[in-house]
Image 1 (cartoon, rainbow, N blue to C red):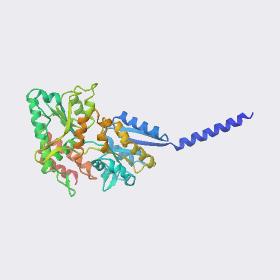
Image 2 (cartoon, rainbow, N blue to C red):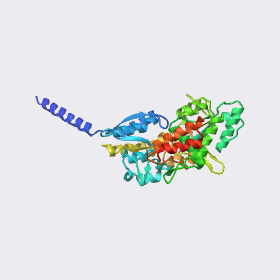
Image 3 (spheres, one colour):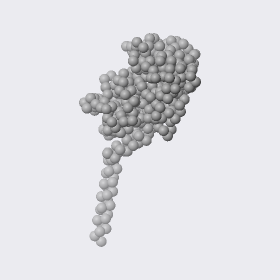
Length: 412
């Protein structure tokens, strides 16, 4: 008779303890990108390791294609209370997100160790008007990938150092019958085309804005678009480039149907995968070329950051997740598809082994990353530029006229 009350008391206490634990658990929701850079499997593994180290914090992951990332963020945070605690954002969005109060200002949370340890160029990914809106996470630029075997067969001893040399080498490959369209670009009417264009703008010494006024219809920015048109109409570039995104370029290149391709870091190890690539072991990578008398190499800032939303009810826990995901130990463990933001990682054998050629290119390119315009009106500007590029490639407008029209359409 004495055991029954004790059993009831024990059961009640256990129920209270369970309820207390359940109420103590914090549930976070994070929005990520479903393509390039870290794979979904990598992100899931990182999140699981975080929860194991922080059992009272559970993170729900959601993935969308890059093209839907911004819209998903804006729509979700416009809802009552917001949907996400953590969001992945492109380097081109902090100005808009700051003005719209989408992201939490985390300037006071950025430590001196973070500032000193992260590569200087990475910080521009998460800054606007001197404030920090997250931590850089994906540090990236576009590199020139080339097929060593095809270049050797063409008698080409070294990859091109200038964009004109790229065109000349592609013509040699075409004339020798090795490939009909040696170069693949991601020039679909999307942000991908702006990334390629920005790389060329950096090479030609062009500018997008000066003192807030558009300048991309003249100088190096105009020359950059003229080069794109010349490459496309000369027959050395894949004619489907005007419809390609980066994944299309990767598939064409790793199938052996391109000698050259401009693409992100992630392509290096995927195209070197013997299970799915016909060119594994034949891939070379260098910084994007320069322009004689203007630049030695070219690069654009294609980085992305992780930030805490201003509407999150669990900002401290969300920031804890952000710092875990961007920590040097986590990034070093997953450095095959996206290189770390930490300076000392580039001399760490666990990071460099097996991708020494990529690391050598990264050390050069990441130091000269050229930004796309930092403006709250970036989205409209990008759309206008995308249209100008397409019209120029298709011969519907001359580059100078298309760019002038883009300025008018952008509203800047």
